[in-house]
Length: 183
Image 1 (cartoon, rainbow, N blue to C red):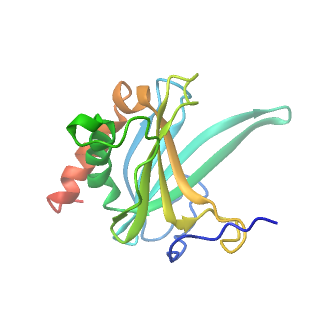
Image 2: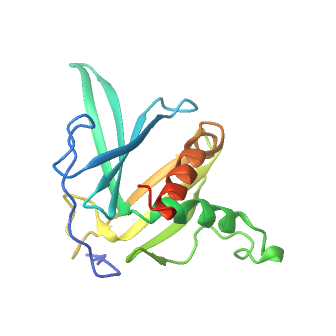
Image 3: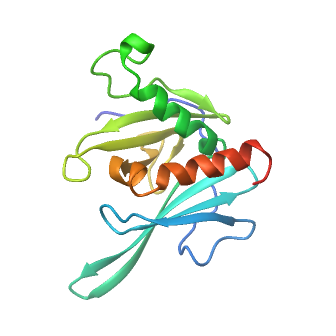
């Protein structure tokens, strides 16, 4: 049996968000945005414990038994908001401008707010139009054993949602507020 252990020291689990309208004590909604370009999912950006960030994706599943609400949470350091726009710009630079080598699909892991994040190109999203994923290798998905089946927290967004749907502008705005101490 192949055992995949966490590559870094894992961070404490954040309070679980089971519904975007019923946040845990101490959690504060920073923003929300609907993905108008692909799925129509609602994304809620939540500040937890003063220095942590939960990215919450919600949608309604159409099941034979009727509609079912679904809420998924992935956690990152609050500094994600100021790091991500710059990391995305650097990731997209060609090698001649100091970017990653030709054909690179993932950035090296980088310490962001004490957690190890990496950025990856996601080719199969949005009907193969592509997008980007961010992995937090310092946090293990809930209901996984980090000693045997480590799975990092991960968000994946279509390029159209980032650029045309306004998500990148929203993250930039929140990152600027964080830098200015207004969050």
